[in-house]
Image (tube, rainbow, N blue to C red; front, side):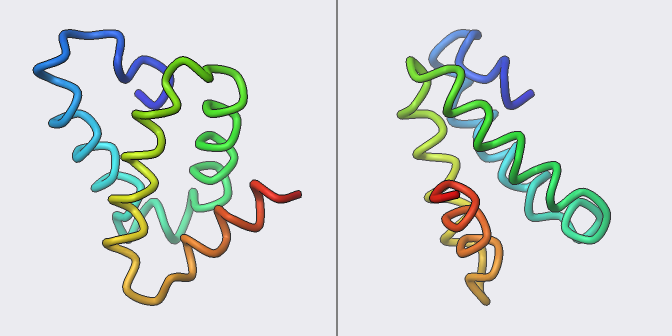
Length: 81
């Protein structure tokens, strides 16, 4: 979904970004697939720069939902590496 997001009608982008944020922030994803989620976000931004605004919105929603800022920090650290 992270790669295909934004390919659909504009009216669906907001809904899909929120669903993707909910999936990334879900306890199951955080417990079992955290690193994969981070790597997928970084890879998508690097390989699909024309969708940067969508990934920026996704990151903002993740950061807003990340009460401990641990995921946000991990994404930032992975981006810098």
